[in-house]
Amino acid sequence: MKHFLHLNDFSKQEIFQIFELADKLKADNGECDWLKGKTIVLFFPKSSIRTRVSFEKGIKMLGGDTILFPPEALDKKEDIKDVIGYLENWADMVIVRHKDLSLIEYMAEHSHIPIINAMTAVNHPCEILTDLYSFSKKYVDYSEKECLFMGSKGNIGNTWKEASELVGFNFTQCCPRGYEIDGASVCYEIDKAVVGKDIICTDSIPSAAKDDFEGYQITLDRLRYANADACLNPCPPFFRSEEVSADAIDSKYFVGYEFKKSLIEVQQAIICYLLGYE
Image (cartoon, rainbow, N blue to C red; front, top):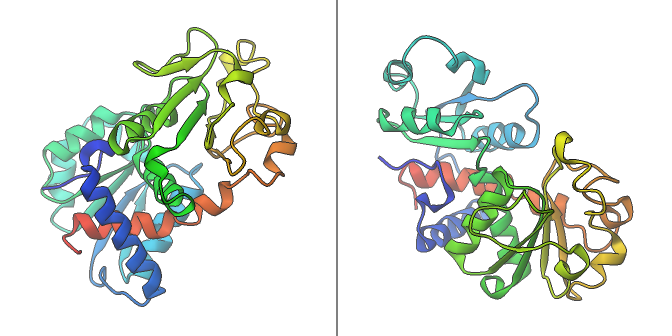
């Protein structure tokens, strides 16, 4: 049984197959009914906006049905292998957004239906796979590009680093000392870090780290030192005047809305790929 819990659960070749499937689904313009008669159980918090909307709409567009629970429904005395043991009688797939990756891994270990990780505290594979898809549409040779991640070690930075190792582009982190991603190439000076970069990604700064990150902000002035066709892709929710300046968001470099538009097709492609469609 194939699951999608980490970005590197897929090989580079499989990622390209998913991208081709996303292209096909986009070309079908919602006329494909591959999920007709399928029921997918979702565990999402109330605060989830983009990921939940795109998953629910994408499933509905393909003819599928969804049943939604809060992730807290999994935080109880009942063993998760018993929860999934019952659910797989009636569901064709489970999509989980929960802070604890080990819980989702344990569920997948005992599941006979595909499990998709929709975000944990340590990774965010669907989000970054979508960014990779959008990245590949903007740059034909994207595997040779330079990526800068400005932010602390966490689910977004961890997954971008994983993506770089899988696809082959260069990855650099910019952060103060003490916030490094394990094994990442780090530049501690933000003015130098932006130079020559093709894609600049950010994550929101944890409240406890704001003093340490003072001066670490992607601004329009700094973006002008990146490559001429560089793009700014902050992970939502982003906060103007914190990790990114307002003028950077309102500039030609910002691609956030456009990059995330493909969440529907890429997540549809992940679902269909795991269910055996090609």
